[in-house]
Image: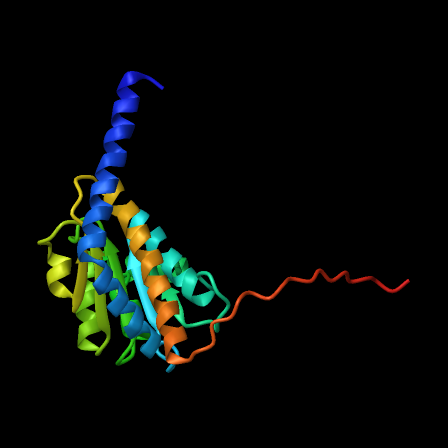
Length: 213
């Protein structure tokens, strides 16, 4: 590694460490609160919707995968939909209504009073996420945001926001991934404390299917 690239890598790691220290100091209570709220909403039949653009879309889909599948311990599957992953829907809405409506129209279709919408954005200024937030709140859907540094329009438009103060988009996204995992940990812990079953994953047994001769 050249001296220049090593310096850049060191700076990247230092910025991430600083962002995580701020998350640890100011964000853990927020994430624990979200986990407890999800543990009340999802087992009762509620749904989590999530959306983002670019790298934030990947983070949102990571969150929904952990809820439909599992984070660490075995537990029931819960309803969670990554809106950007509906490719035919996204392209149809974008073509017919414009890109700013690609999430809002899906929120109007899927969101119900008491559900939760999680929006991820490094800038907090994406028009399609702002439209989704407004549509969700009008429908009685609780809206949370993971964003970059405050103040930003998305943080001001939602019910609750966790803002990561970092200089680069990459660092914000990396801290968002940690926040997603901490939210899943808090959710599972809240399920366990409420008496919901959280079991270790069962041992997998291989089965061989034989064709009749």
